[in-house]
Length: 281
Image (cartoon, rainbow, N blue to C red):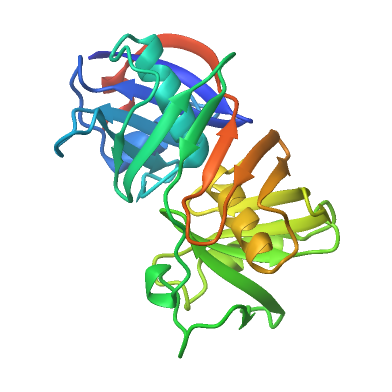
């Protein structure tokens, strides 16, 4: 079975995007893992699937699968690519749309030169909303890792769970060691995306993110939102801030009690057709 697909990326966070409105397919966990393999498959951080909505007054349903085949709630870089994809594939003529995700409704707006601005919704901070195991809500939490190191983290849900740690130098941060321990820590029942942020000044921060089910990526949109919100809540960042990731920069805006706005670029890499049977069973 031949499926048309598009390879896209947002700041190097790369995606395989499938239109499952005009074509049909079922992809199980093993098939997604094989497609994600960068040597034997197409290779991607996440698979993005376009489906018809099953909610009223919504334009599309959007599903996200990590490279390990696990389905996740939200992806900031992905939703920007999604918006550009459905417009360029003429699945809609709208430049502003409402998109149904597992985490709720997001509202992307197409701009110039492939840039997209997205209403990412309201951040959540209560332990049960992350989810995170804690006796009571606090502004910051101390958490001991399995190797004995202790970190101070903020927890933020931006449609998916994030733990944000401030570090003195993001380049020197031992993300390869600390990231997996935070991701699978017993206090995060649904696992967590681990962000490591360096504050440059009140309008500029640098960030690296170890993502659930993927590992460290070149960029993470929801991670940038979570880190920015965390820095703003701590009084370290202004209400509009540039978050610099390995793959490029995102602009994040937030005020207490309001939604988070994320603005950033998208890019098409190539289009093609794949024989799904090659990757199945």
